[in-house]
Image (cartoon, rainbow, N blue to C red; front, side):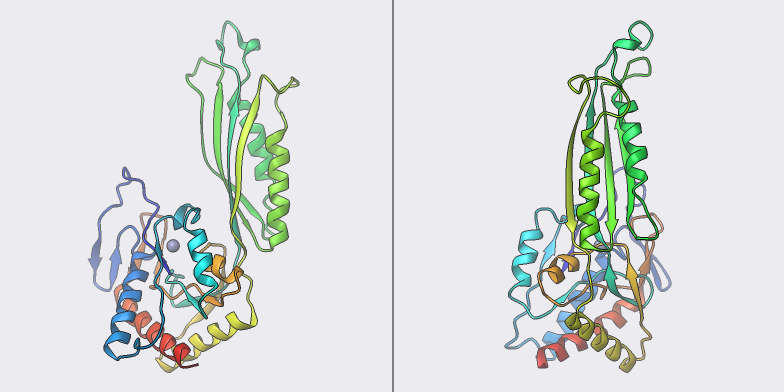
Length: 305
Ligand SMILES: [Zn+2]
């Protein structure tokens, strides 16, 4: 599995690929165009060695991963049911494999208020921005580093003019949670916060909110089968002289969806790189080769099991 999309808007200045020595820079070099190159050369090597004969491999590349695989999820889940192993070519920092991942959720909230003149009719207005601000404070309070639940209001917008009481305001919220139940609890809490008026002691017809909440990735919790896959890969790494670390991650991948369907999935076979989702994104050119070797041997061995 891999994804073709990146996160950079067209007006972002970080649009070009360039290389300096063993380092390559550009949008997606780590997350995960580099991983797609690893995948391509893994397949080329296996095909050349005749290792793909009489084997069934499905390559699934989606284009909506960064927004949560909302439309490709069903295809990923379908494929999970008819395969033995899932391999995802995401980057995982420098020379790491990922054991465990948090679940991800997202929410969008739109507050509708009532516009009026900020000088002449202040009392008649109902500010969507003011109401949203109250909600944001409550939403941000849900972050609890001890339990691992984090919430981030990442984007806000609203209002029409400085001297108009803002008739509307909007926010996009990101949620991360280690255990499935924490995701359910967070959804209930979002609903409570979004559903109540907090900034005005008035009836709700004058100020209201519409929201959309989605738990788009379940937590990736290790299983005996996924540990087997991880150990096998670490052993191949040792054989190839690659020292691989094992980390847990707060970042989501499509591997969480397939593992939740019962498919043992390793989701960090991509290139060694850092700075994903920033204009410092970079990846090691030589790790393309190292990772292609690693996953070619892995696939060969898995197919022989
Ligand atoms: Zn990615």
